Image 1 (cartoon, rainbow, N blue to C red):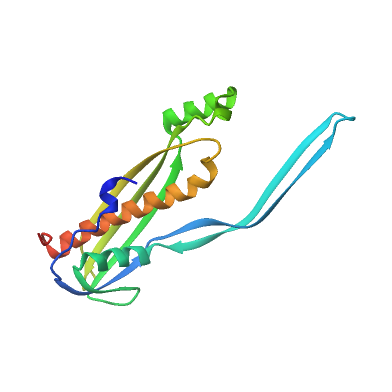
Image 2 (cartoon, helix red, strand yellow; image 1 turned 90 degrees about the horizontal axis):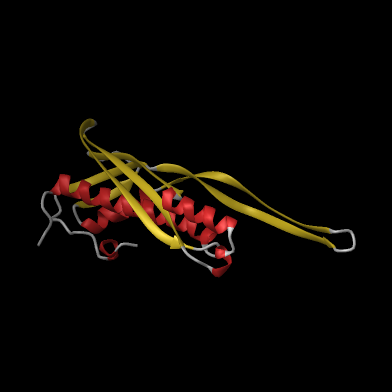
Length: 192
């Protein structure tokens, strides 16, 4: 994670008594089970393996994360999910994993050579966006957005567990950027 995300958010003078956060829903795959098997019969020349995973797509919301980030900025005295405050923040966040050109070449190279077994790292990426529309007394006021790209290095041994984690980190980075922009729009310059 880039260094600037390891530091606390900027802190603002409280200017807004309350705000409500709505939206930020997306779907995630949740594994509910899996299994595998191996069949080895050298006398018959059979070597086989199979595996599977089952699960479900569930709808989750990042509204809680934006709420926590806005509370940490101190700009808004009380932030609630849902509800009907004078300031309403509606939005969405999305993130996805991809290989990119360099990562795609690395995946191709590791799949056609033995380099993968040496654990040679290849770059992979997670992109995320977050958009917030600001309403005051049910009237549209402004829109802020952020887009971030997380680059990380991985090997065939660490690739699968890192994908969902990288997507989550990128989504949080985008939410943090957009929370900072919302606080700046609503409360002006941060405390020094």
